[in-house]
Length: 336
Image 1 (tube, rainbow, N blue to C red):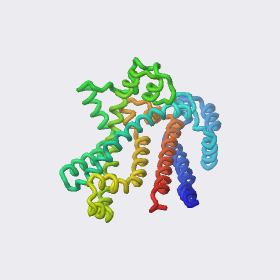
Image 2 (tube, one colour; image 1 turned 45 degrees about the vertical axis):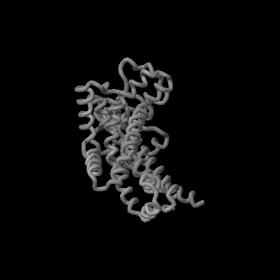
Image 3 (tube, rainbow, N blue to C red; image 1 turned 120 degrees about the vertical axis):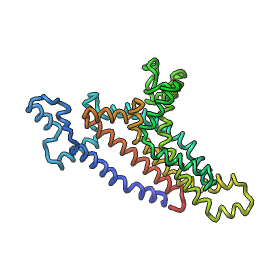
Image 4 (cartoon, rainbow, N blue to C red; image 1 turned 30 degrees about the vertical axis):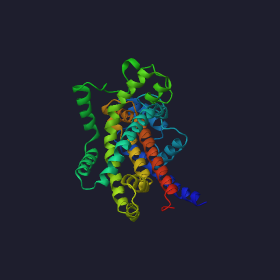
C-alpha cells in the first residue's frame, strides 16, 4: 500500500503538467506571427476562400472556444494535417521519431560509458591533475554549442581526414534496401540480416551520436563527480577503510552503490534533453529525425507540424521525468 501511495503521489502532478504543456503550445500557435490559413491556401487566395478555411479550422471563434476545440482534437489524437507533407502530423511523427530515438539512445549509451567512470575517478582523485582535466572537459561539453561541435566534426573527420561517411542516416546505395520495421535504421538492418547496411548505418550514426554524447557527457560527469565527493565523505566510507576493504571495493560497491539511485534522475534528464535537443544536431547532419522535421516545418510555416512535434517532445520529457521520479521513490528507502 505504501508503494501504491508513493506512485499515486508521483503521478498526481502529471495532469497539471500536461495541461500546462497543452496551454503553452496553444498560446505559441496563436502568438507566432504566422497565419496557418495563409500557409494552407497561399498568399494570393481569394478572401472568401480564406474566410471559409478559417471557419473550418475554428480560427474565427473566441480564443477560449479555440482552446477547447484544440484540446478536444488532442484527446482524439488529432494533431492536424501537415501543409508540407499533406500527411496527418501523427503519421509524420511516427515516421520521423524513431530516428531521433536511435540517435539519442546511442548518444546516452556513449555518455554513460564514458561519463560515469570519469566522474567516479575524478572524485576519487579530487584536486589532482586528472580531476582538473575532467572538469575542463565537462565544462566544455556544456559550453560549446552543439551545432558548432557538429560542424567541427564534419570538417575534421569528413572533409579533412575522410574517415566519416558524411551526413544522412545511410548511404544512397542502401536506400530502400532495408525493410522498415522499427524505423531505426541500424536495428532494422540487423533484424533483416543486411550487415553491410548495418555497418554503413553505424558509420553514419557515429559522428552525430558522438556530438550529442559529448554534450550529455559533461552533465553526467559533473553530477557523478559531485555525488561521489559527497558519498566519499560519509562515515560508512571511513568505517569501510578502517575494516581494511580494498580501495576499489570502497569506491564502486560502497560509494558508487550509494549514489546509483540518485543517478537515475540525472540519466533520465540527460536522455530527455537529448531527445528534445537533437534539433540542431539533426539539422547539421541531415539526420531524418523529429528535430529535422521540426526545423523544416518551421521554415515552411507549417504550424500544425511544429506544434505537434513540440507537444510530443514535451510529453516525452514529462514521461521520462515521471518514470525517474517514480523509480527514485521506489528504490530509495530514504525518500519513502
